[in-house]
Length: 258
Ligand SMILES: NC(=O)c1ccc[n+]([C@@H]2O[C@H](COP(=O)([O-])OP(=O)(O)OC[C@H]3O[C@@H](n4cnc5c(N)ncnc54)[C@H](O)[C@@H]3O)[C@@H](O)[C@H]2O)c1
Image (tube, rainbow, N blue to C red; front, side, top):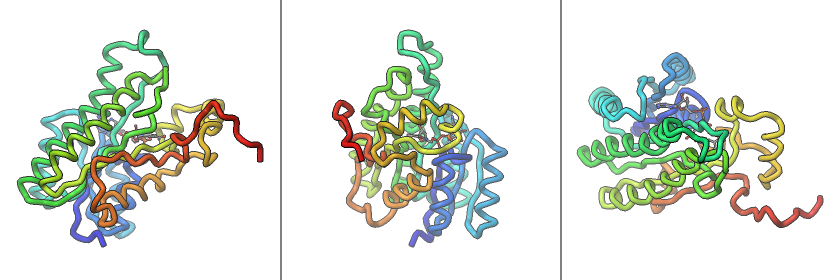
């Protein structure tokens, strides 16, 4: 179904980005993995190739405009026109309320999570317009885009901004046949969550997740496959929340005991 498609995935050395790269490769896309972590990225691209997929890793800081332009130029010249771009690179750097957060930390999170998506989206959009490619751009947002967490001021602000970036990009790209959407995962197992969450934090999150478990990264990849594919041909400007029911839950209502 996806033969002939070329997908560029940022933050693809691990977690959700890697699961999306693996899924796209299984669906027949040629995948370009990019990340700061070169060793892990090279290893994962090799594993995809050994499993029969077409994959290549190119190291790149997705918040560096010149580096991203070089990456997109290289892919367009050496592989072909990018048809799908997924921005999964992200950092959290939480733990403090906004009034104790340094400007450096706040700016760094915005640079990677929001401005990085602008940089990648702009370079890919220009390439798609130049090649006349009717493609799809997908941001990885979060339930944090619409639910504030006191100790994650930069992260939540970055994801809130990403929701609007998704809309304005979708409006500008509609006439070019390019759809732009975001996925808003709820709690998902990945190196990020495994490193950051202790058991009490996991229990707290599960108490507010109606499905009662974390998502596997592959479940988020399934949504990315839908958004990149023909079944989503009329879907653009949306954030699709794959959140185990989190946003449907009014916390002040006590659950009925089972
Ligand atoms: N895991 C969750 O529960 C969850 C929930 C909601 C949203 N998300 C979002 O999903 C995305 C992926 O998160 P994850 O859980 O897989 O985390 P992760 O830490 O496992 O993966 C993120 C990847 O991004 C890479 N990265 C960071 N900064 C980069 C940069 N400047 N340039 C290139 N690569 C960079 C990291 O090296 C890492 O491989 C993030 O945007 C995150 O905010 C995750």
